[in-house]
Length: 80
Image (tube, rainbow, N blue to C red; front, top):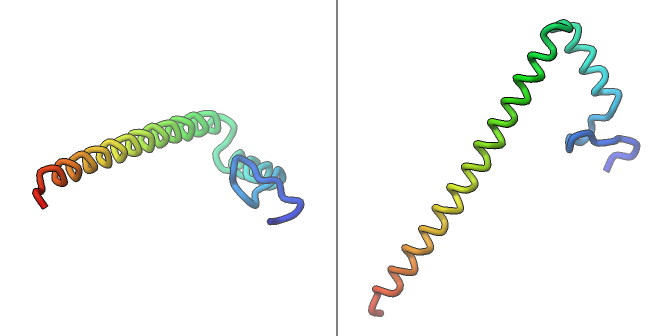
Protein backbone atom coordinates (compact mmCIF):
# COMPACT_ATOMS: atom_id res chain seq x y z
CA UNK A 1 0.00 0.00 0.00
CA UNK A 2 1.15 3.52 -0.69
CA UNK A 3 2.30 5.42 2.34
CA UNK A 4 1.25 9.02 2.68
CA UNK A 5 -1.61 8.73 0.18
CA UNK A 6 -5.07 9.26 1.61
CA UNK A 7 -7.72 7.49 -0.46
CA UNK A 8 -10.76 9.66 -1.09
CA UNK A 9 -14.20 8.16 -1.70
CA UNK A 10 -12.72 4.69 -2.08
CA UNK A 11 -10.53 5.77 -4.99
CA UNK A 12 -7.00 4.62 -4.28
CA UNK A 13 -4.16 6.92 -5.15
CA UNK A 14 -6.14 10.18 -5.33
CA UNK A 15 -5.50 12.50 -2.42
CA UNK A 16 -6.64 15.95 -1.40
CA UNK A 17 -4.23 17.85 -3.62
CA UNK A 18 -5.30 15.94 -6.71
CA UNK A 19 -8.97 16.59 -5.94
CA UNK A 20 -8.29 20.31 -5.58
CA UNK A 21 -6.41 20.36 -8.90
CA UNK A 22 -9.27 18.51 -10.62
CA UNK A 23 -11.74 21.00 -9.14
CA UNK A 24 -9.75 23.95 -10.42
CA UNK A 25 -9.44 22.37 -13.86
CA UNK A 26 -13.20 21.78 -14.00
CA UNK A 27 -13.85 25.35 -12.89
CA UNK A 28 -11.64 26.66 -15.67
CA UNK A 29 -13.15 24.34 -18.28
CA UNK A 30 -16.84 24.72 -17.47
CA UNK A 31 -17.12 27.98 -15.54
CA UNK A 32 -18.76 28.73 -12.22
CA UNK A 33 -22.31 28.79 -13.60
CA UNK A 34 -22.16 25.32 -15.15
CA UNK A 35 -20.49 23.47 -12.25
CA UNK A 36 -23.61 23.17 -10.04
CA UNK A 37 -25.60 21.87 -13.02
CA UNK A 38 -22.87 19.36 -13.86
CA UNK A 39 -22.64 18.22 -10.23
CA UNK A 40 -26.41 17.80 -10.06
CA UNK A 41 -26.39 15.77 -13.29
CA UNK A 42 -23.57 13.61 -12.00
CA UNK A 43 -25.41 13.00 -8.73
CA UNK A 44 -28.60 12.04 -10.54
CA UNK A 45 -26.66 9.71 -12.84
CA UNK A 46 -24.98 8.01 -9.91
CA UNK A 47 -28.35 7.62 -8.19
CA UNK A 48 -29.85 6.01 -11.30
CA UNK A 49 -26.81 3.74 -11.64
CA UNK A 50 -27.13 2.58 -8.03
CA UNK A 51 -30.86 2.01 -8.49
CA UNK A 52 -30.24 -0.05 -11.62
CA UNK A 53 -27.50 -2.02 -9.88
CA UNK A 54 -29.80 -2.80 -6.96
CA UNK A 55 -32.59 -3.89 -9.31
CA UNK A 56 -30.20 -6.10 -11.31
CA UNK A 57 -28.93 -7.75 -8.12
CA UNK A 58 -32.50 -8.41 -6.99
CA UNK A 59 -33.43 -9.90 -10.35
CA UNK A 60 -30.33 -12.12 -10.26
CA UNK A 61 -31.25 -13.38 -6.78
CA UNK A 62 -34.83 -14.08 -7.88
CA UNK A 63 -33.63 -15.92 -10.98
CA UNK A 64 -31.22 -17.98 -8.87
CA UNK A 65 -34.00 -18.91 -6.44
CA UNK A 66 -36.31 -19.87 -9.31
CA UNK A 67 -33.57 -22.02 -10.86
CA UNK A 68 -33.05 -23.82 -7.55
CA UNK A 69 -36.79 -24.47 -7.33
CA UNK A 70 -36.84 -25.94 -10.84
CA UNK A 71 -33.81 -28.13 -10.10
CA UNK A 72 -35.38 -29.40 -6.87
CA UNK A 73 -38.64 -30.13 -8.68
CA UNK A 74 -36.74 -32.08 -11.34
CA UNK A 75 -34.92 -34.10 -8.65
CA UNK A 76 -38.22 -34.97 -6.98
CA UNK A 77 -39.87 -36.03 -10.23
CA UNK A 78 -36.88 -38.17 -11.31
CA UNK A 79 -37.55 -41.79 -10.23
CA UNK A 80 -33.84 -42.71 -10.24
